[in-house]
Length: 162
Image (cartoon, rainbow, N blue to C red; front, side, top):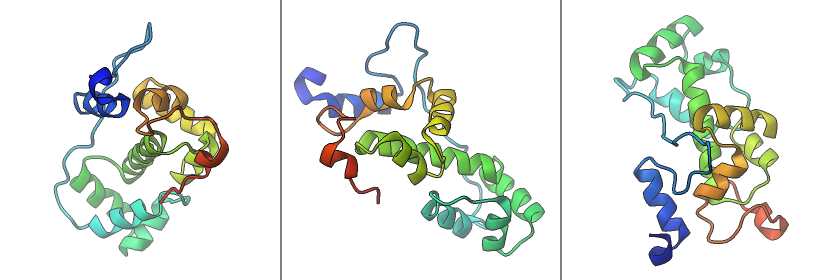
């Protein structure tokens, strides 16, 4: 498929099929880990607000304050609706945002980490390896939608995050 339609299309098809386009030796199979379907919308506004603020340090207290409830109530409602705790959901969203930035930009790893709220490149690396089995560089190499080699710095490294 890559020879017919290019690497970007081949990578997108591989992602949709939940497989890596090329597996280096010893690497585990790549699959996405989606969240369970949401079963309510009492926390929808807070989830939306958190998505718009992934780059900021968000705590349970921040999320509860936005929702106008106690931390305990938020945690109970959030889990009932999403199947996971608020912080598990937040981490999942941050990792998904990091994957998106790795696929669509040539931002340096530290900027990707800051833009999705994971702080540092080391933190990004640890979370991404646990979730996908791939380092950020390997993930970018396999799934980049940029049409040219990434990580070259220069003008590409200043791409917009929004």
